Length: 424
Ligand SMILES: Cc1cc2nc3c(=O)[nH]c(=O)nc-3n(C[C@H](O)[C@H](O)[C@H](O)COP(=O)(O)OP(=O)(O)OC[C@H]3O[C@@H](n4cnc5c(N)ncnc54)[C@H](O)[C@@H]3O)c2cc1C
Image 1 (cartoon, rainbow, N blue to C red):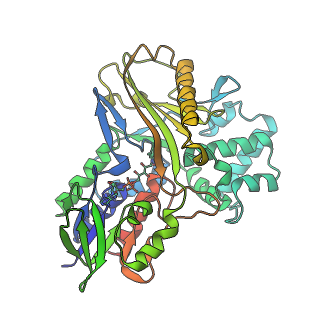
Image 2 (image 1 turned 135 degrees about the horizontal axis):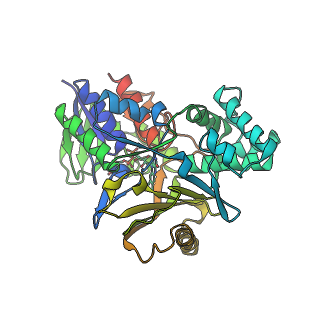
Image 3 (image 1 turned 30 degrees about the vertical axis):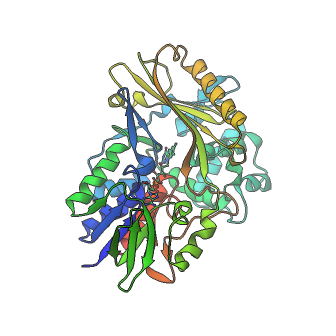
């Protein structure tokens, strides 16, 4: 039987490996670090912090839902309470327009602007509005003379879903494609009970149950052509033969490896594209601070805080609370220490304002000053890596840097699906 090597055991690598193993294929999965990559969770003093991914957007329309169903993964969804989602606006909190009720209540847009915003939503859902690949959403809003409040709200939405401080640079065709799907959802935001590690553990369980082989702590340094297919080599110079190879590692990691020239040339431009970067500040508190909101978006500073314990009591000790705060970063400023310090201060202010007393209840904290949310940012002039190489049918790619449906982890899973489908 032929062997398929999957290099990279993040969400994408594990998903494609489990899907192909379930089809009876012989799969070897190689991962350099902790299996699960950016979708893992870690426990500090009894508090579970997700490394990265925390929410699934539009789960009823998503590839993750299909994956869970098809592989019979044991996952419990915890759905977002939109009534408890708030935007900070002019110094006070107002309803977030996460659904029709939120739109009726929100003060972000008023009167005729509310009608205009609703009209934009309807046009998007009905595919009347599709945007254009050559025009950014910022340019489109100017061209269409969309009212300032409505335009601001459309960009705020994109900040939250694309995790970006520069939503105006998203190509308008990508914007409308994304919202066409999301506006149809009945489950705008959901969390995974126990954290994302639960999903990773379930994928690992299914992969092993179907006879898959995992090479843990194995950093692949070379994938070279050999007579029968490929030779995969790690940094200790151990070698394995494979007939086909799926690269589920980011292009900037791939370019450090010895690769066939055709692959090297293909990935090179993608390895230079800008990623989506954020600052993450997680705190574990005890006792719990009860508030009338579970999510607050500070639109002035482009930060948000989610009370994950509101949805999932299992991620903290009794009466404890996990708050996850994320600040969207501008790529041009991420190297400046003063900019990062300013973001930390803004996060502290947000917590002081909405969770007074949090400092006295602090049990543990975790800061990631520059976390990569998505390897290739959606902005004009950048585009995702195709999943297949035209010149070589035995090579494929999967990950959140690849072409696929949705954004963030949805891209990892949908590109994994595309490869598993093509190679079935
Ligand atoms: C702070 C933060 C918040 C996020 N929030 C959300 C969210 O709310 N919703 C959402 O949907 N998504 C979110 N994401 C994004 C989500 O976490 C990622 O899209 C997803 O986990 C990416 O999975 P992947 O497999 O494509 O890539 P990765 O997780 O990067 O996997 C790549 C894997 O390759 C391995 N590797 C690298 N080099 C080698 C090598 N040479 N040899 C062998 N293995 C190698 C790595 O160890 C890693 O396991 C967030 C991410 C971050 C960082």
